[in-house]
Image 1: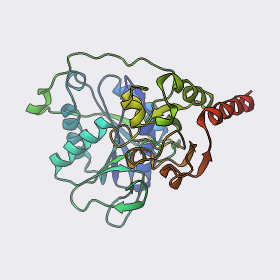
Image 2 (image 1 turned 135 degrees about the vertical axis):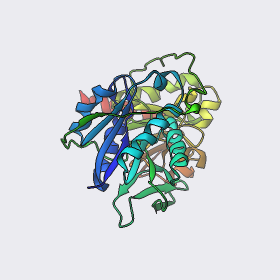
Image 3 (image 1 turned 180 degrees about the horizontal axis):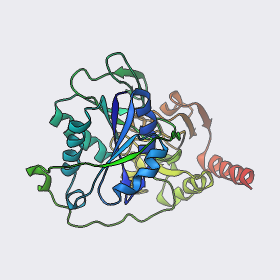
Image 4 (image 1 turned 60 degrees about the vertical axis):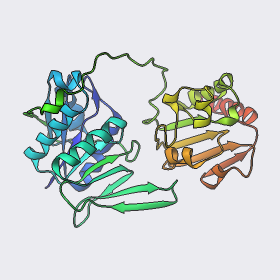
Length: 320
């Protein structure tokens, strides 16, 4: 059976959820071969094998930590040359998309970004994308070279599928460009205790209707009751009410949770572009003509300052 390369997103050996989702998708088109790079790469093997990786290629070198993405591109190129895969799958993060784009140029292949599904086709893997604020769904395949495909988080379930997970060392020769940009320092992001926005199963977002930074407390309370991440519209971020790192939208982060709750968000195209692939969308807005209601599965026409606290209380009551 043909092999599919899966780039492993991990932190010191702790594999992040989007990678496990990629393994589910990879099994639809071939046998997953994981590529884990950097410190702790070998420690990822057991988890990857549990979720379907027949082989784990590992490489560790100072270049992976000391420089930006080019050393990782060098490693993936080496993996492509060693395996001759039918596709390369990469998590659709900012770094992942840069790695994928550079790799596609290197190996002379086409690239598909922000896929939300993947299936086998007679002429190669077929990727599904959502476009134009979910107005269209497209199916595409790469017609030249090895398809390089980035996949949005929460696009597939995490499924256990025990496999051999044989660990092999990947030999990487770094290019002259690999050391062109050096990382001088790192500052850990302060933890909120909430899930990572792009990986969360539930996201609760606030917009212009929240009407102030102090009022985001009610958005956070609902999110905490649901074990959700907190998002914000561009209007709320531009007003200084919430950090840019939490912005959902075309110029922020793209999310695809199982449940997305938009509170006080009008639904401009800028915001819709970042959350349109959410599985279930709920909107709370006092303007019954707000564009967001054209997109939602459930809409509540009402004052968020009344609706959101009541919803939070109800969730907490049912949990209790």
